Length: 179
Ligand SMILES: [Mg+2]
Image (cartoon, rainbow, N blue to C red; front, side, top):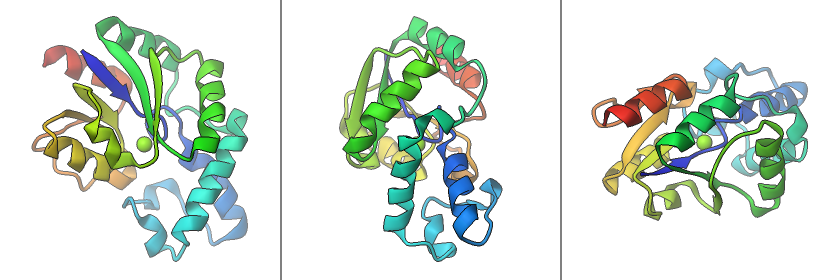
């Protein structure tokens, strides 16, 4: 089984780093208020600024928190049930920071795959995608891929009809084993 594991919003809680920065220069936003993927429209934040700032957060990768504790042992369990590739959509310049972050947290994976745009992931040859993006989830379903949606405030509107919503990675492992 080939498993594609996302980074931002699934392993790395990078939105917390971005919020720290944004809240120092703009009106304060809390994570739970980010209830859509394109939340920048709602808060009158320029999309380009958001992505540039997010990339800057990765330059300070040491300060980016993990989404949950024990990612090392959880990803080890995941690699016991299949091939686990990190599949991440990002600006190329941040790849080295992400790899350092993964190393620093002893996260286990087989290959590192970087794409330019999230929905492009759906064209890759994987059986299961673990991701937090509602846009990617939609594309994975179109391509008949199994989707494990890592629950975040920005994906609560996604219907649980065909996707498997999980609130942590241990649950993801259970879902993969069951199906
Ligand atoms: Mg993500």
